[in-house]
Length: 321
Image (cartoon, rainbow, N blue to C red; front, side):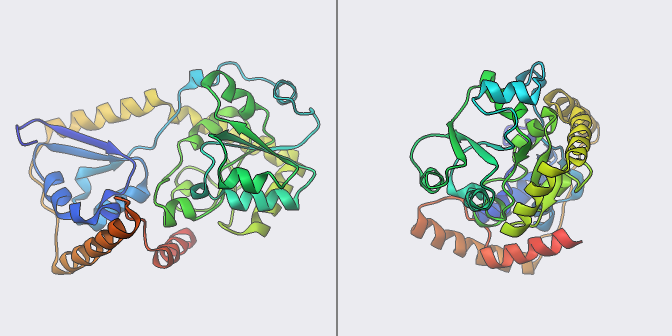
C-alpha cells in the first residue's frame, strides 16, 4: 500500500482481538483508498473488525470451501469400513484433523467411554500426545495417523457420523479455530455431521436441517446426539443429503468467483472511507494491548486468546439470539 498498490486481504483470524497492539494500524490501513477489501472467512471474524470501527463497505464474509477432487467417486459406507478394517455393521464416529488439546477432543474421549458399542476413529495423530494418552485407556477408540489425500476419503465415507468436537475451546479459549476447514469437506462427503452449536458453525450448519448440533462442552448433549444419529437412520440420511446439496456452493472455484466479483466492484468504486475510532475504543485498545503484553511475556505466544470467562458468556448470548 505504501507504493500505491491495491490490496485485498484474505484471512480467517480475528487479528484485532488476537494482537491488540495492531488495532490502530489495522484500522487506518483498511480505511485507505487503495485497500480494496478485507475478506473474512466467517461473520464471527468480520464482526471483530466492525467492532474496531472499520466501515462495513471494507469488509465482507466469504466462507471457505473444499476441493471436489479430494473425494473422487463416493464409496458405499460398508465397503469403506471394510477397507479401513472395520466390521460393516459397526457404528462409527469419525473425526479428522489434528489431535491435540485445543480441539475439544477430551470431551470426545469421555463420550466414547459412555458409548462402548460405537467405534470412535480419530484420524490425524502425529505421535504420542495428551489425546493419544487419554484414548489409549478406552478400547473403542482407534487412533489413526495423519492421512494423505488419497486415503482420507475412505475414513469420511466410512463414517456413520462425522464429528466436529462440540466445544467452546477452539474458538473462545485458544482462538485458533474459526469455522474449521474440515466442515466443508464433511458436507461434501455424504455422511451426517454432528457439531457444536457455536456462532461460527451456525453460519453454515443448521440444526436438524443439514447437521445435528448439540450444546457445546456438554457431555450428555454429545452422547444424546450420537445416540440419535446412530439410531434414527432416516434423520441421518436426510441431514447428509441436505449437506451434500449445500456443499455445492462451497467449492474453492465458487469462492474464487465471489472474490473476483467483489474485487472488480471495489476497483470501480475506490474511495477513502473513514470509520470511527472513539475514546472508548482507544482506552480498550490500551487495556487489551497490556493484556497481550503480559500474555506474551508469560506464555511466549504472540496470539492473545479471548478472555475465557467473558468470551464464553458473549458466545452463549450470540448462540441464543
